[in-house]
Length: 468
Image (cartoon, rainbow, N blue to C red; front, side):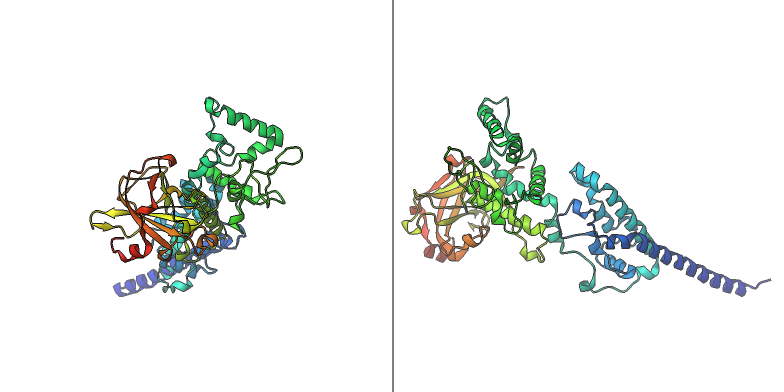
């Protein structure tokens, strides 16, 4: 018969032994899962299901170390594991993001892979969270953790963000390409579209059936259009420039075509479009180098090229990518003769801050263009999202500046900054003058807000005046 002390000792010894067995079983179980289901993800030459939503910057492999201990500690220290509720771990939520993808096709394509990754990580994290030895591993120094790039860069590389930027910068300008490249904008029941539809039919007869599809750049939705541009650029016919040139964005056909002239006629009077230098466009000039549409196009193409090439490494490198199209325009006429023809000019709009009784520090809108032979400069405005909250109304497709008191600053690119970087914004050294106006901001280029240069104060005076 055992005494109470013997029973207690037996219980403690047995209990400790049982804990050791259980602990060892959990550790082994977690290790087995890691080696059998996590390591293959790490070693796979194929990208993970992250590519469903991200063009670059992140892959599930980025979260995995060669060892179980370092991988778990790294995830834990980044706040990606919920030790109390493993099934609610953030890493699992990130894997499941693809379930919410609005692209049904992409969801189906990646569904099996996404499910396998989720189940593998869910089982492994649950086993790890039940293992005190893994839960209590020492913290890993931030520099040694396995993690992708900063969150801002990861979000910037999301396909949905790239499409959103496309909508604002390119899709909003698509009617410059009407009707040849916007087939889905044409309505057979609209009498005004009868002639454009007939011209498209003739194009196909003349250049072949595939020519019609080649013309159809803007698909039914922005997302479908971006997918088409990317796919077409990856499979560019030999000897042609790609629609999106990742190596040299300025050499993208999407940009070169609308700034190119009609092809010269041959001896028989025929005109043939070209797809390599020198580029000729059957539609002729639709926009000009460094005007507001060119700036929007090149900004999106250059950003997409950097995203697709996984070139962003620091948050400071990300573009502002924060302007939205309006249907309102601004014109200055006549400009000073000293500017010269084709001088590049930016017109930047500042709102009056009624609360502080002074001009806002940050601009709310801008446009950009070259001086015309008639001494006019101007264009459609783009509004800055983060600076126009109180003076700009926002719709699903564009921004609307409210009537009121505004300050217009004119910046002249005499140093050729925009020739080097069309996406740049000019600074104080380029300021030519400033003018206060009361603007109605009506819709349409023909109803553009007109400002005479005589209304501008010179740059020296504008800089010295605190109110400007």
